[in-house]
Length: 150
Image (cartoon, rainbow, N blue to C red; front, side):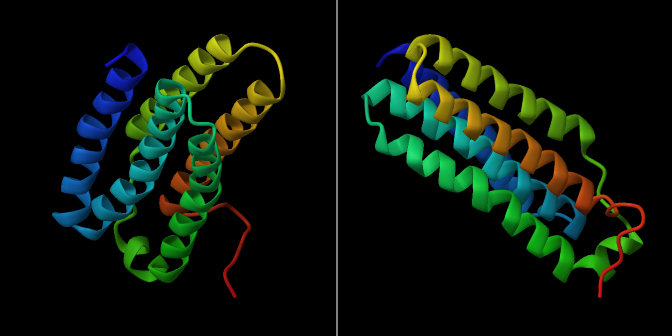
């Protein structure tokens, strides 16, 4: 076991264990936030495992998860808009913490990878992961001003 594997294991065990508990218990507002954060925690873990096992295909899985995770949260926010409007979730502390962990993982991997196409791909994944997580969290907490559902 190397440092990359240890970091990925800590992220998966601690983060996804907490997110799984949040998804399976509690009110709706906690469940949708936990679902959003679980994808934001799994993606950096896949990137760390890619470096640990020297498997570039894991980076592609991280890219797919960075794209589809926030989209799934936006679908939930749209479908559950009426229920969430009564008591909207507010989890900016957790959202920003997970975004910071994702950024730290991407920066560490960029330093280890060095300049090139792989580094550019990691930076794109990091930007998609962080921006998608923040946009999805904003949508869960009440949406955007001036945007109406049809």
